[in-house]
Image (cartoon, rainbow, N blue to C red; front, side, top):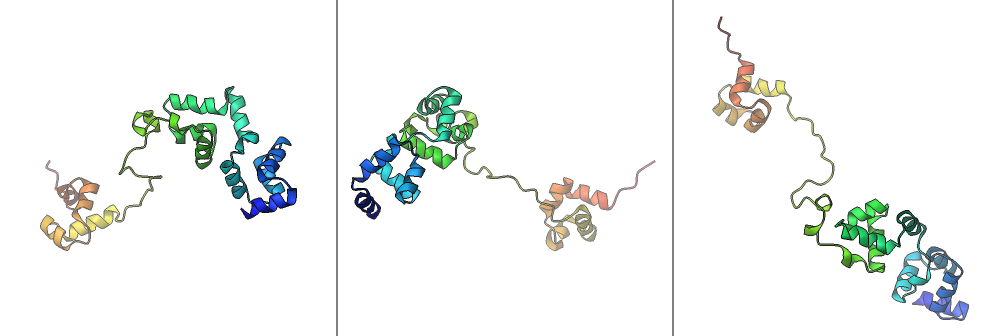
Length: 193
């Protein structure tokens, strides 16, 4: 509020009139905020609160999207929503940051056009709870085959191996299939002629 009072005192006009005048000169919201000496986020908040966003031109990125698709930004987004795309997918297709895209949806009141997740295209749905997130990281094995086989050599009886070995029996199962196959690698049976 102090910013608005300062602007009113400096320009001798209400805040709304000053903003409309700057917008009519072709300034962007960013340039208008700099001209008035306000932080961008504060200026944007006041503009949306007082309904002044409509006086500013669309950003160059939105104009580029409109030129590319030959329709208004609102119609482009509605078209993607009708094709059952998710917000995240539409933002990536249009080359917009997701948080900025969400703010545009709110500004132009377009969120209602998107379907619930269960009705979206299968390639836009998440994979559900329990699905690993991010890139899988390859982990080197904790024990190499020689170390495992050395433990099998030390404890050739499975019961003894389970009790005394430093390596868990499931590691042997995963690596060699069974304890008997691991023991076969350590103590090969002589081939009959």
